[in-house]
Length: 296
Image 1 (cartoon, rainbow, N blue to C red):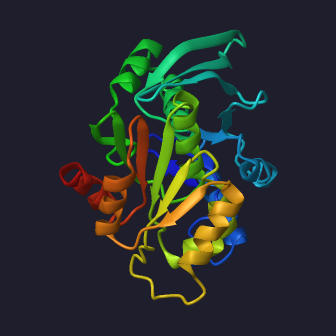
Image 2 (image 1 turned 45 degrees about the vertical axis):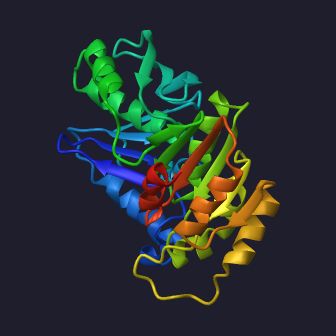
């Protein structure tokens, strides 16, 4: 999940995922932290909350602060996102809402150079904050269109033989599903290869069922060694069993690569043409994806 506190007394809540439970200990504590965060938004600001998330809808009646604006594809939203159109290097969507005089408004063709539903939600939330601060809509549209995104969010690394290599920070099932769904929507005829580096024993063990289902749009998963990020080795995690679970629940082929050399060798022997390769993870995978550019 994610939330953002802005210096202008606005806060944004896009989702509550089963994430960082190594810190929060259980989901109830995580949920309570979101409720506490939203309740701290002062009367001079607004909480911009996405109600596409069932986890967020469940806490709305627990929030004392009523200074809330909702958004999402949900028709009950104050600001409804519609007509999402994914392209390989950008996304377009419309935003429907009622102004202060209760007149229906629609802002068409909001464009961002980002891919995936989660990026649409983030862009829409930013747009809503700016509208409520009185910024002219065309200025917001121009700013979003020129925003190139943060590093390692579907960052194009290189192309070779009509194969496109990307690097992405995605290390949570929601992020992975969103990226793969977005790529599939615009490139259904192309083979999608995920180079996946599991991140943290605690995350993978607590979310193994969610991880196992999030590669449904990937034609092939190359499973890299787990990046522990400082955690001690946990004997409960087995890479082979994890790979088999993904293959079963995502109905896709999973191949384990033990190191960077095996990854390079796999692509040297098996890469054909017109394929999309996406490196996913928060550890060494970024270096491996960059290294492919000179190795292949």
